[in-house]
Length: 287
Image 1 (cartoon, rainbow, N blue to C red):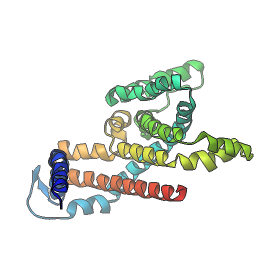
Image 2 (tube, rainbow, N blue to C red):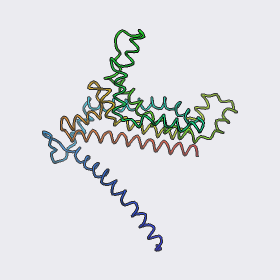
Image 3 (cartoon, rainbow, N blue to C red):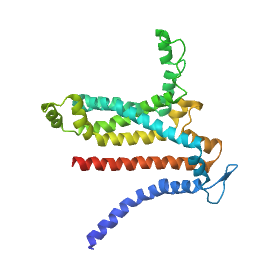
Image 4 (cartoon, rainbow, N blue to C red):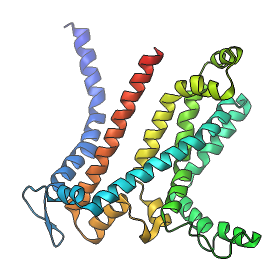
């Protein structure tokens, strides 16, 4: 190895050292500590020494706990599908807009992200509540006699979660739609493809990387959402993040709370692995 290569390699390692230390201190060590705690038992709020699989057996073997995990995954998946369905036309509008309007549309899409999630979720509570805007308007029009239950249930969580995380889907999709060569759409039109066929044969396959990235992002964020399920779901909705909070800070069962958190982490990692595999398959097919 020449002296130039030696100094270049050590320069690269030196530049990466601060970030690597921060990553180890803020991510690796806390995650290792959480993993260790999840394999312990507790007594009156105290974490006991020793190794046990009781926490994982009680979560995955108990019907109520397993149903809670599946329900949380189902809600996150449904919110992801709704964000994809609503995000495609919005993203197409932004991507096809004239250049002078595109910045304003980007700001309109990202503007909700400037507002705290607590404020947005509470705003939806005022809109969907029994005396909220929707029920008051429907009663005033005469369509209903009594208020609909639009909050304090899974419906409120799904509506609020879709609005909260929709910008992430739109921003991911817009970048992919803008990268599509307009000549491909024109070729499809020349060959006689209608709007639906052009969408499924040109637009959707070429925008798949953005769709997959946005779906994984929305799914993982909704899976770990806490404020929106707590405010819009209330005590009637059981959600994993709320259960983690209850176990850790109400019941003082830290091992069970960390085990439940790690189960969610594994689900997110599986989603990211599927995303990576899907993107590679799409790139190989297009390449």
